[in-house]
Amino acid sequence: MKTGQLVEPSLRSALLVVLLCCIPAMTAAYDEEETGGWRQDHIEKPDVWEEQDVALPAYPEKKNLMDLGIATDDMQFTIYLDKPSLLPGVDGVVRYTVVLVSPSGLWNVSHEGLRCGEKQYRRFAYGIDGSWQPLNNSPWRDVRESGANRYRGILYKRYFCNPMRPNQSVEEMIDSFSETHYECCLRRRCHRGVEWPGPGSQAPGYVHRHRTAQSPGTGSDR
Image (cartoon, rainbow, N blue to C red; front, side):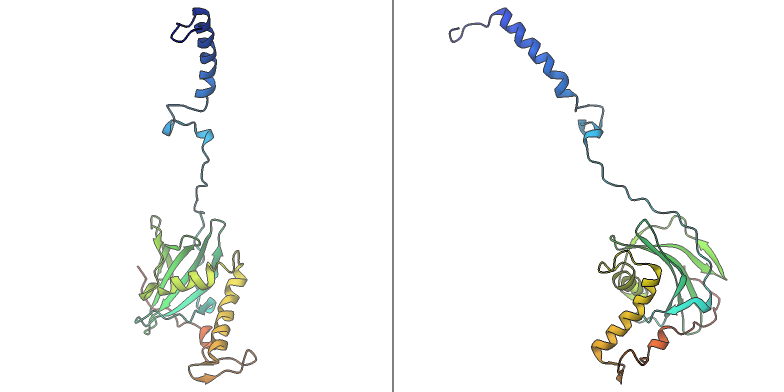
């Protein structure tokens, strides 16, 4: 066939048949009705995080509170952890109850969660007059490390969401407070200017860490 010569009708028909056979294969993975035009079964779907539905724990009792020894900058609160409330969840959230006690003995009670990996926290309920007041629609917020919120940043980095200690049990989390306190004293060789020979004797402040909280006053942490 010379250049510029028209294609014979029989050859044009054959080419048309081949083209029509290819169209279904080309459009099988394409669907204009789907978002973006591509069929969803050909798109890798990311895992969707789902928050675990967990009931509120028992209201904290004085005998179960452990002094965390964490300062709140200029705010004169003593921060306690309610040990029975500590719960690592399958959703990556560590739930716990804290009691911030003022110098006058006023209890500010909050049941919270730290979302490991995202560095966020959420308050699930606050306590008043010995009972919980749920915060059903409370948002997740970024963890900050200053003021009255400083304790959340320390709990997140050192104890509950420490990447060097993944998948800790409740017992291991509780033990980590004593271990960290010992390591800090060992590096400084003293505590508040008092020599501490080692784990065979108690360091000043260690007993303070586990001291019993004062009896609750009237109030809440809103």
